[in-house]
Length: 92
Figure 1 (spheres, helix red, strand yellow):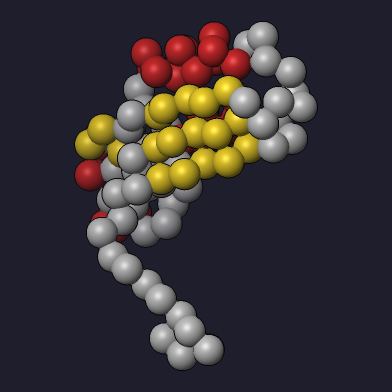
Figure 2 (cartoon, helix red, strand yellow):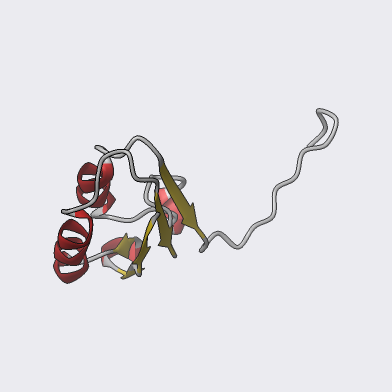
C-alpha cells in the first residue's frame, strides 16, 4: 500500500488548494507504483465538491485525482467538515 498525505490549505474563495509542489510530489511518488497497488490518500479538505459555498472542496483536486485514477483501489479520506450527520432507521 502506498500512502499519500495531501495537505490542502486555504485557497481562493475559502476552498482548499493542494498546490503545484504537492501535485508534483504526488506524481513522482506514485510513478513507479503498479496500477494494482491499493492507494490511500489523506486530505484535510475533501477532494470533491461537497459544498463549495462553505469551503468543502479543493480547487485543484481534479489534477490530483487524474494522477490517481489509474489505480484500481483508491481510498480518499478527508476531514475539514465540522458537522455531524446521522441517520438511523430512516430518520434524520
